[in-house]
Image 1 (cartoon, rainbow, N blue to C red):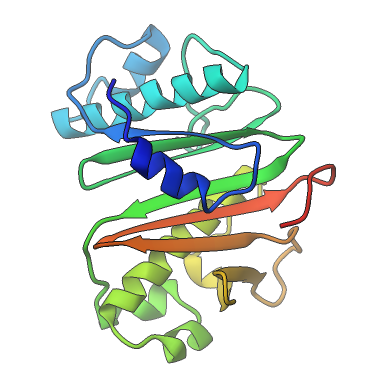
Image 2 (image 1 turned 45 degrees about the vertical axis):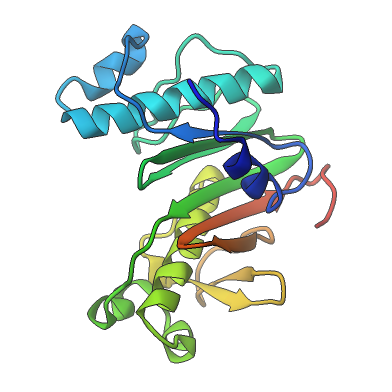
Length: 218
């Protein structure tokens, strides 16, 4: 499978050392291991291509990390079932797919998201953003970028075993380099999660990560 090394470098630039990233174009699904093939038996062809491309890159990334697997199944929540001791994330959008993996000794949680050119209509803001986030938004393009940051953060939270019920249950607090995540009042505390964003042309790339207790600070 052809790798998009430029996109890989962009994602790596938004993450701490120790993460392996693989990215490439979404291509037609070829033969898959039985465990993976069973997960998409009823999927339409476009979804099959997204799934297969993501699994190929994820297995490639795991091999580069030194944790090769023959197949990558799914959790009850439908996310990738990463090997013990590994955190990871998958994303796909507008013809590209990417996978990122790291050892849990380095990161406790990891999330990535890619978005192509899109907007997020005003009518949806209240369901995914907090009041403070809505007040700071300037237009539908900014809303789409913030949604991508929250998508990456949600994946990171899910990897920690603490997925919130709603996107409005946590807030992105702007920083010079990106965002810090703050949970809503009354929610269980979580370790510090850092979210970074990069806009390349009309493509947005977001990463979210949480250092392990043995890892290094940002």
